[in-house]
Image 1 (cartoon, rainbow, N blue to C red):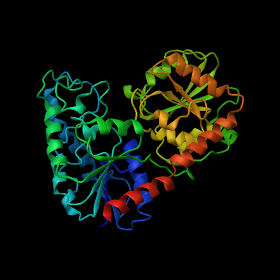
Image 2 (image 1 turned 60 degrees about the vertical axis):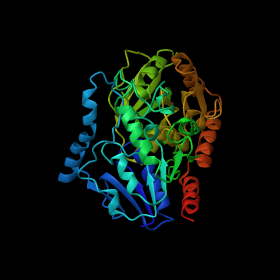
Image 3 (image 1 turned 180 degrees about the vertical axis):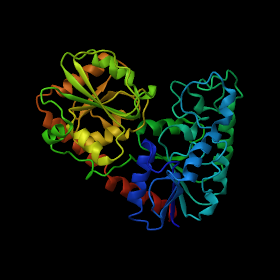
Length: 408
């Protein structure tokens, strides 16, 4: 085996979708590439994992909770994602079963591995970061905390109140493990690359930026009127699109979008995809259409193509798949000027970057896009951005060049 790609889930979630797309691109150049996951969704011999829906697959999903046992002692913990990397899932396939020339890590929380297992690897490691977990004491987004620049401790998200807490213990475990490894760090955004270089764990490592890619033949502009007709949308009301795996996740900023909608002075339709329900109060000028979870890319492409604007009101985000997908479908995007979003949105060219976290300014951006005198100009700019930065071909060439360099 040449390349082993590792992600906890095959396709479920933003990181998994990005990792799987990368794997599909890379395997075109490396026939002996393999994908290791806990839960697999396809009967593909190049993917190792427990089949989703099978008895062992269902059991593996339950056993993933074992990794969270160390968190039970922290009763004041915030409801944010925190991965201890403590107890690997008993039903996942251990790393030592594979004899890879290069291992490519992605999102490895929820019992994918215990961090010390990486010491067994005697090959180059590429680690694509989809959040900050790899260089923190367990959190996936540190908010305003800068503990990752030292050794963590007194973790705000754990609510520990103690310097010597689990976050500091995990940082020490990572430091001891990483010092023995040949790790190249990849980040999809410049923001995350800067954070990685400031961290105590990756300050001396090679850090490169390679944006996540997607199939721009699937995510492409479909005929606007036909897409709207398919969804039953009125032609006299602009369609605003918002979506996430969980729209109620505070990090995704659904509440900020709801505040922004109150500032709009024209009737609009709000399309929402994903799990959960937005806390949208009565707004007579806003019609809400809940689309639920959209599992396939074709459905997503239709929805993006029918929308006049995609809004990403995230408080923290790396390089959101939703924004890349929207741009590829020619849909202008509006977001706050934070984290990796300035990499994707060129202000007043393919969308709007609002002041963090000014809902009125976000609303101004939505109004600017839907009222633009030349909407096709915005749509062309959006599509061109995706083709030049986020196509599978561009990403594949960058990763293959990196692999060849590390394996030479």
